Length: 400
Ligand SMILES: NC(=O)C1=CN([C@@H]2O[C@H](COP(=O)(O)OP(=O)(O)OC[C@H]3O[C@@H](n4cnc5c(N)ncnc54)[C@H](OP(=O)(O)O)[C@@H]3O)[C@@H](O)[C@H]2O)C=CC1
Image 1 (cartoon, rainbow, N blue to C red):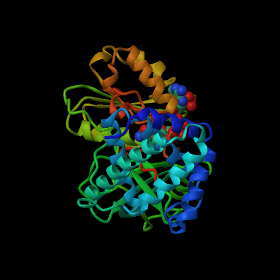
Image 2 (cartoon, rainbow, N blue to C red):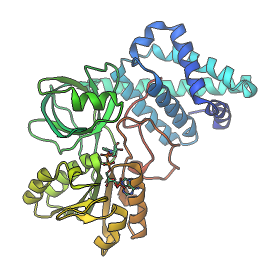
Image 3 (spheres, helix red, strand yellow):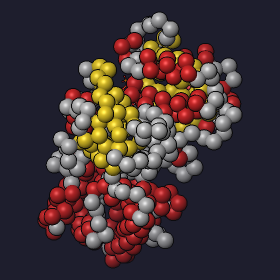
């Protein structure tokens, strides 16, 4: 069991005062003590420091919620496998963390605090190591995949088709880590945009972010025949088993990807589905022809484009939260899934609540492809797929 959390939180609060300095200090200590560990990390450490800090933050704030803590640590332990992290690395990380706390939490660092942190770290490391070793018994740390299709739908957007060298199990709504040859040891998460197929291929919708290493490489410097590495599929935004309930799926921009996967799965099994595809202008509806084909094949699927900045034939005008009241007569019986820009997700969740959809039936994961976690863990009781950015649990795995 984790130790009494108050002391652990008190010390961590001192790191929160200046996370950038504290994490720089931490990595400085770690690499000074164990220079060979530097090879496990990406060339630029800015993102990594953010991710480490937020993983730590979540661990600290979950100290009094053993279920959440175990869930989080298990995901972290499994996720660390793709970085080549081994059992023996944890001692060095623990020592660097203690050294950091001793400096940054000096005013509250007592023998009691040191013992509490040592116990908390031991518990975290043991849980992560255990989860990694159990996972290693049944799955590889990554899958090599060949790019079999690269469809440039806009200057900054490509639909990329990948064929893993061996079956990569996933459920619609989940995402995978992707590493390109151009940026070794840099992983980014992308939602899978299709339901499982007999040929095992996966599709990703990738928008090149300004300065985005992996997204830029995938959109501009990738062609059929290239290879990438994929991490295991993760994420809890999967289909609820209540097949009678009508589904409302909302995808804004490339947030369409997981919604399309869910639509394929649900509509393919005869469930009633409304798929709202939000874009600014008709050009932003980059996947509409494919969606129309899917709609034609699934009698109970309706695809509704929603354009926020210019009108378009066959599209609703406005932002999703504003058009929802006119669309939904009886929203109380729906289950809803939402992905896209965070403000769209938040606005849509609020609108659905106002329309009477219970929060536990509104699912999202606020996944952003390149950004680190930016908020505190959700309060206990928040539905798992409705938590704030969940970059550190079932999903991607910040390393120590
Ligand atoms: N699993 C997931 O959760 C996934 C999430 N994503 C995320 O989705 C985002 C997609 O970005 P991109 O393709 O550039 O999308 P866009 O920036 O093109 O936006 C798509 C639509 O969302 C609308 N929108 C933005 N803010 C609001 C708001 N406050 N209220 C209502 N509508 C809003 C935009 O309208 P306007 O700007 O006119 O208001 C536009 O119509 C990325 O952040 C990506 O990380 C992507 C894939 C999967």
